[in-house]
Length: 81
Image (cartoon, rainbow, N blue to C red; front, side):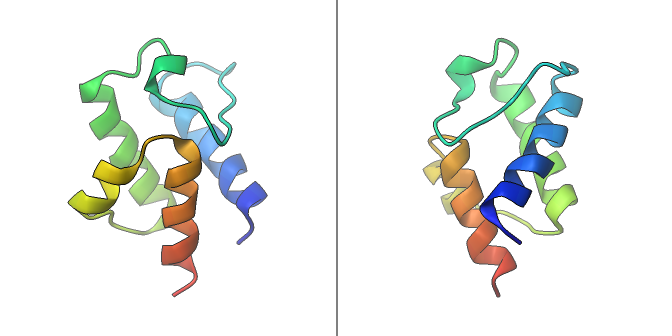
């Protein structure tokens, strides 16, 4: 799975979780860039991403996700196993 393919899937997940078809995430996207991205929606987002990619993030990984690019790095690492 390529980085571009992961971003494509993440865009779908973000649009569904935040109910906004206009969302397009990139490497540097953070919670500050999406109006409804609060702590509760962050949990919903993590669960939706885990389901989409068939992985389970550990707490350390979640804590290091400073932007969507970091999330993609973790997904790539996990899907590479």
